Length: 143
Image (tube, one colour):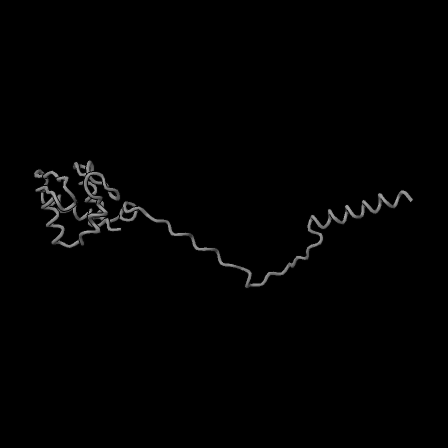
């Protein structure tokens, strides 16, 4: 019989196709509560110091005064250029009234040696009050 071979081949091919498409798998329609998982918490996105303090009045006031000065030619918020970053200064000094006064006077008179051999030029035209506002801003930028 010549017809049985093509029928047998067709049945084997159909069975293989059915199995390949998932016909041979058993699935369960029920789901237990143990299988349901809570959505994963969103990963914490690290904020820059600028984003972190953008609404703080000390930040706003100090940043406005820094923008009118030449400080940004030697300092950046989180990266050293010529002088230390503001974040490095904030890490070294606590934000106390005593440190704010001392650092404001150093900004006005200039200095060398604390952060290396490159001198910070004096800013004699800067008022003590403006220098304190700028220093308070810098000390706020603690990482």
